Length: 152
Image 1 (tube, rainbow, N blue to C red):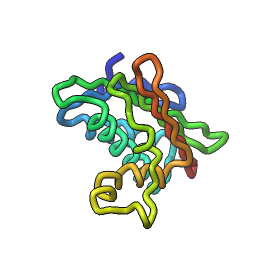
Image 2 (cartoon, helix red, strand yellow):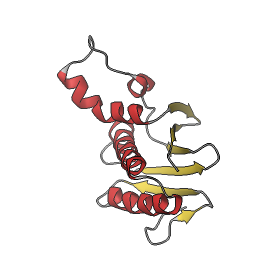
Image 3 (cartoon, rainbow, N blue to C red):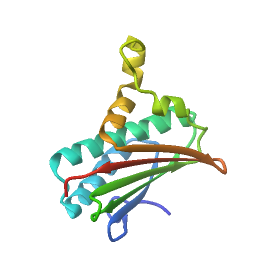
């Protein structure tokens, strides 16, 4: 299943794409996300938060789960549930196991150090914007799911 920016695979209320490492991938994700947000009438604040969540999570997966020389294949699935006014984002990849503690860690006043803040700021923002974050490792693959209420 490949993803082409001109023709992303679109379910009735979802979007699935495959992201690989390389120049231009974040721009293509942003373009697909804009179309997805337009189709669902997502408010500007939700668009901004969703864009940040996608970019930061993809960068985390690439940096922590893969060697620089690897060709990375990360599946990204977005699904809107208009009834519950929520958005589910799922990332699936076959990189190294991610560290659940770093995904769930919330810095507090007594644990904040400059390196911790800089290194974990993106994930901290993701955790701030989403309502639920779950991770599991199964059959050599990482499954990272985010859920967010949206204002549609």
